[in-house]
Length: 224
Image (cartoon, rainbow, N blue to C red; front, side, top):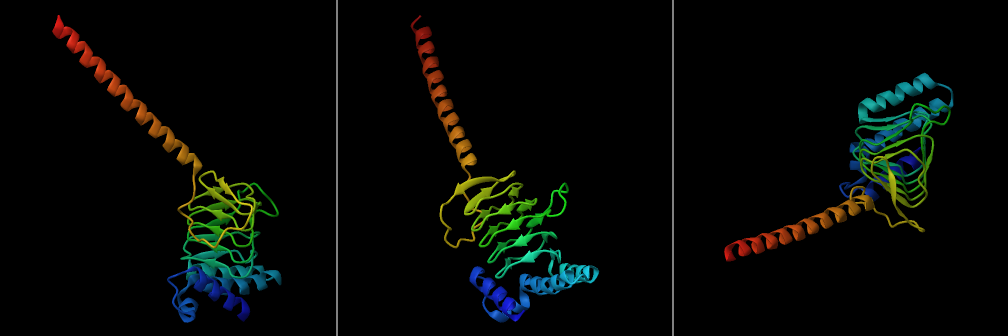
């Protein structure tokens, strides 16, 4: 238990530049408290004390603003930055060194039975407000952009943005450590921007042509 706690504190210090000391992280960060409660709740859940486990998890939700079902399985070095509004479903499985931001939901779609929630690989970053819904896998090293809605499997080392989520970057190797979950590439937006620029250029050319035509007509009338 203490090894896990030390790993949680280390993950915060590594990934949050606002964290200044181990004591600050231990006393002030809801992610660390939520994980301490979750480990207790998960042990109770595995032992068959499901109601008591849910009582612990609900108390944790009131204290931290983070709701983690006691059935969820979470690896080492897990970090939820800020934390409010995070929901993690019962059959969720999370690998090591995963980072979530506020407002993330790892949930179900309501149509599945058994395994209903996602499996999140190791070294994954999921941006603020993102929703990952369904019993599929988000591969190791992938990044989910802020407010994305992901409804299908994501291969390793990919970047997903938008609603519905679409893969905008595939990499053959794991990316460098980068927690930016907002400034991500969006080729669809880039294409739309290019089209808008081209329309503006054509409109400018049309106005110039019409202006030239009007001048020529006025000159012809003056000659008459």
